[in-house]
Length: 291
Length: 336
Image (cartoon, rainbow over all chains, first blue to last red; front, top):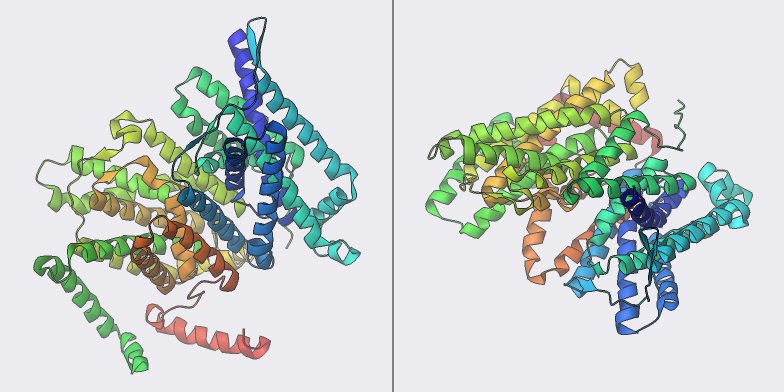
């Protein structure tokens, strides 16, 4: 029982990181109906920015977090402007391929300038408390609390502010909303900035929790976050959070009871089974195709 | 001059004799050593990449779906055929039974393709990409967990059975098969799904059946490509067949142009060739290639050929029909 509770805590930690990345996928999908396959690699860039800040500049946690967020947000908006914007009217597949290309570029570019995996020095002071045989580290609390706070903040932004209203409006109808005077390009840039900066936060938190980083780390974690978004119903922000915690729990429980090599197998099998029985995710609504 | 050459290619006899000539050439080259080993190797990679690109084009180009699982089918073909040649076949019989192994690799991939196709085509578009991706990851992760296949360490012990004539044969066969499939009555069903699935269904195309068959054929040739690849490299491990391999094939297809056999062939040739030429750049070529892809998508999203086709692939009735169709469309809409 205690073992299970301990593992659930780990699941919460992993799920939080997945959730932060999944939000980036789902926000971009909601507004552009495009899968930003480069998002996992932006998360990787966040981790490397964290490494730069900590190992080279010796910054503490909060400035590192801020710099990584700003850096990934800037990169995300730049990518959107240069690579995705010219393709907004193009077939969907062109945009997907471009995103795959951008992702590959980020991976290989990072690999070219930095051929070896990097180890992040331990820069967040950690203490571990033991409550009734369950050990909780301050790291876990930081990760879970920060993620939850950011998710609540995002939910408030999307539901209570003008920009959020504009985002929802654009994802609802792309042809009429620009005619109402909504600055579509600006709103899309804001969406990318928020989505990728959340990915940057996830990168920093991941680097703190699992301190060895390499240029290809974004592929697997990115896909997992993407699965989370799909499990929750892609395009749905609350769904992405729920999906991430479901996937995090499933993965941790698999590792707890089976050899850890089965983790990816089970994660992707879960996705397949879910898509067969609930093709639009937990919270997603089926799209009605009108002729 | 060139126009006359192209016109000559439209004649069936000229095409056939070129094919025979090419096949003979593929025997002569290794026997006499006109081209050195490295060039031969690159030629074989080009052939395998053509098989992969042409077969992926069937699903992604002609049918207009988006599958990213091609490397998974390659993996199935590679492992099935390697298992046969290393474990099942008696020693020394390799060169004789190799076509059987390749066939078995293709069939294995086709069977798996059938299994994947059923759930896949309940959904469409982005979700098909997700299902095929999940399949790819499951194959990779599954192989990593089977100790018998070497797990993550990989599988070796294959003889170098892939030779230039075999590559030529399978490449020609895959182009021939897919060309004939696409221009058959059945192929029109595939095209109609790309243009408008609902309209196709209303016109009496059994879209579910067409999709599944096209997917199975595509996986079969991916398996063939994988089998040839395994017996050329003589070593396979699950990491070879990851999403990056799938992306490679996608790049070839979209570089050449979707819905065009000539495009896939050109794409495979140019991509493989470029990667070899840029080899001195080391890792930076892997930085350059994605950039090429992004610029291509922005400035020429339809690829080099872009739905057009070398006229010698097109049956003459379709050719004249297509010309008239394009002329009529241009008269109606202005040049596109």
